[in-house]
Length: 430
Ligand code: MEV
Image (cartoon, rainbow, N blue to C red; front, side):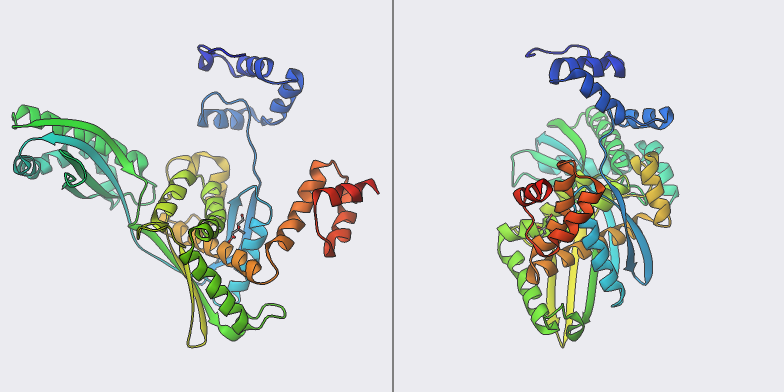
């Protein structure tokens, strides 16, 4: 099959399934059966899922887990995490319990400013466009009131609107930069609709008032870079309280601080280090129906904000106290989008006690730091493979079709042995 499929979206789900399995799979009946298994029995919930995207054939499941004992600012949370990577939830839970016994995570959110821009080109006298913008600014804000009114009534809305000269980077390039407080929503729709309305009115007034020069609106879009929507989280404990197995607290802390420092110095390590943080962050972001692509894109841009990609977290020992902290941008919400539409996202909010967006930012950052702590702790003590391989063993066993009894025996057998694909195969043969 090497040709266009026309009008695919117009087919029913059954027709799409039949066509795709026939054209693209090696065993169409088996593929159909598989897809049918991965559709929910309940037609109401299934059609809800189908409505989240286009051309849906089935549901792609990843485990929905919880990490209990995540103590943030003195309150215990049981945190839902949706992630397929073995050992992430176990590590988060272990770290969370460790820190719950040492005062828990201290988190804060200073601001939660979201931004968007109208990108435009103006050929003409800069003074004219700036004067015109200042003159019509109030008209612009009034024009988009039908969109902003409700948000403003709830205490949020547009917090600033400014024309920005970008001609130092590109001739004739300007932005109308909008900042907004989107309260408990992530705010993408609010910002994009507002920007489009503002742009339309700006152009209309520009033409109506016959302003000198040439104006071209290129696009209106929120920015997923949210350096003013950041959660701070930290943990601390006396060095003596940080002993790990045979390793004394002071040796552990020294190695830990050096490991985090390496992530500040070396891009190769920084990316993996931050990936460990995002293992925790993404899992909560997904479980709560938020946009993990936006969070990921922003976190990494933020990690490079000083011109070089670096660690998001930092550790130090001062006056006998180990301190480990992180600032992470998190443009997430607790209302709107999938956060209430996806039944499991709704359940996550319920399990979390229906947090505000700022509270969810603090919880999510705490899980990210917990995850980071767990990973770096393993790296500087036993090494990462021991914990990983234990979980990986079960995946290998499952992929080989092992029975429950075989899995139990394998877990006992491999307790003190190196897990590899061939070793597991050998074990099963025996
Ligand atoms: C694996 O998913 C994440 C780690 O590689 C993170 C890290 O190295 O810090 C374990």
